[in-house]
Amino acid sequence: MVHIDWLGRAVTQTSTLHPYIPGKPVETLLREKGLDRAVKLASNENPYGSSPKAIAAIKKAATEVHRYPDGDATQLKTSLAAFHAVAADQILIGNGSNEVLELLIRTFAGPGDEVVYARRGFIVYALAAQAAGATGIAVPESDGLTHNLDAMAAAVTDQTKIVCIANPNNPTGTLHDNKAIQTFLDSLPRDVIVIVDEAYYEFVADQLGDSVQNLSHPGLVISRTFSKAYGLAGCRVGYAVANHTIIGLANRFREPFNINLLAQAAAVAALDDREWVMEHVAKTLAERDRLETALQSMGISGGHSFANFVLLRHTQSSAILQGLENHGIIPRPLAPYGMADYLRISVGTAGENTEFLRILETIVPHVDETE
Ligand SMILES: Cc1ncc(COP(=O)(O)O)c(C=O)c1O
Image (cartoon, rainbow, N blue to C red):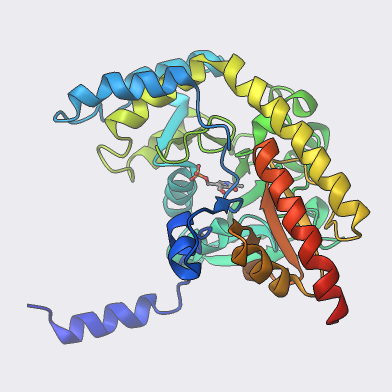
């Protein structure tokens, strides 16, 4: 029996929260349009799948699913600790890096505190800050796309508990080198938590080098994910590396069994098959450059992206979105980021990208005429 008074209060408290809007699932588009095939280029997943070793590990672990998983994800933590040359108690594992971000924000910020992020930074920072009751401070980019690190540092006050940057950023695809990030870290107070979200790290690993070893600040937290280059978005595994005090505190907010048994097995195997990951990263980077060149030649590129997606910019982006969806291609509209002219297109397989460009070339001249 629901007590209406209580429910009324809960609804009032949460009604200003906005849910995260994910990419449209293939099944939804098929149903909406009566299509029998669609290609999702909306969530920056790995279009090639995941390492065969990860799939084999999931199959093997499937016989154990009647048991609870290891609540501490010991094997995965041990593997990640060895991979990053840090201690196991410096690693926090989450149900996707999304959970890691939320745990950190919930742990270190609450009512009266401020969380600083870029206006077009990954939207989860704003949502998680709001859900924690903290005040989000969105700092405008100098060029509309690139985090303005000087302005972000200047936005830090005595109330600031957390600063979040995404490098590369989603959805703008922009990147700062680690020299710039270290200068930024040096300009911040010692007692703020600084989350450097490296969900797309593998696509810039050559340029950035080893951030975990090279960046330093007492409150530094570097987050990574198995959802993008590792191809395990459906398993939901992400993690953060920081000093053990920060990790220990965030761990207290964690659910006991937040990483399921199949996900733990898959992530351990995927981490071990770095060769597979980097081979497919190389394919994606080559395809990304092909897509960007094509968008540039059509005059509709939204700027260079360092991650596994490209940006399309056109005043009629909603008409292009509709046209693409009518033909079974699912891009990501960026209106929630105040970027109504933009669509974000995840880099697909070579065949998917060719199909996307073929359809796009039939749509764009048509919407151009209606301008
Ligand atoms: C910058 C960034 N951080 C974090 C995430 C969260 O990913 P996941 O929860 O799948 O690890 C995403 C997903 O799109 C992202 O783009």
